[in-house]
Length: 253
Image 1 (cartoon, one colour):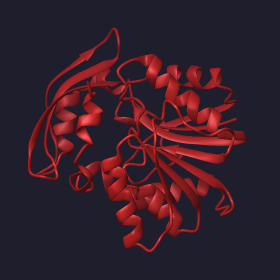
Image 2 (cartoon, one colour; image 1 turned 90 degrees about the vertical axis):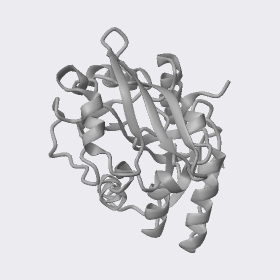
Image 3 (spheres, helix red, strand yellow; image 1 turned 30 degrees about the vertical axis):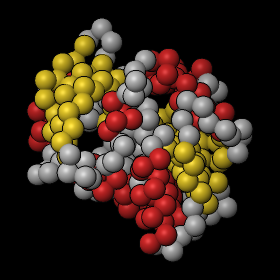
Image 4 (spheres, helix red, strand yellow; image 1 turned 90 degrees about the horizontal axis):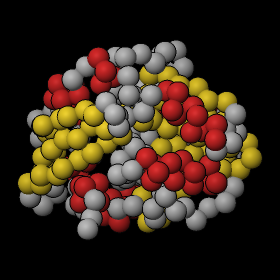
């Protein structure tokens, strides 16, 4: 049986690009460039690349990017977007829990919940981190965003998502945050690219900073820094707080 995140992206490429959380691509790539010291010879892996927005923007700026995603439908859209931009990008259909790379990349990015933390168990989420670590070389860097577990302790996830949604975006209801598992269960309703209304029973894992630090240290990362993630404006100046819905993680081997 397909999981909710597989059903969600079966025919959602066009609508996905209209969602409010996909509108910060350029500013997010500015941060990535700074973290790479603008070294154009570095190889980048974009995990959960979706319709290729970060891959395309970074390639446009002269970087060598490989994008992977579980959804072939999203990759069809990514390849078309790259073609429209006259760019050649290697987009590969594969599962982030089983990546075919070994020490091939200098940098991995995994933004806007690119797989992690959508999996149905903590072990599966960890497999994603483990496979990314394996894909990086001995000096590799890993930049990703994930859901901030400090936020639901002080705020309603449902109210926040409703406040951020634009007309025509996906809507969320019946949110219930489990303090024992740090998982938010909700009903997500959206209209796919064919105009079909879909209702999905979703389940996402929120992480606290100490968990992320421990998980990454166990995978050989030696320097782990965590910041607040502001849409389209990632910055090392943003100290993570309970007001941040997402956290921005920068880890180095």
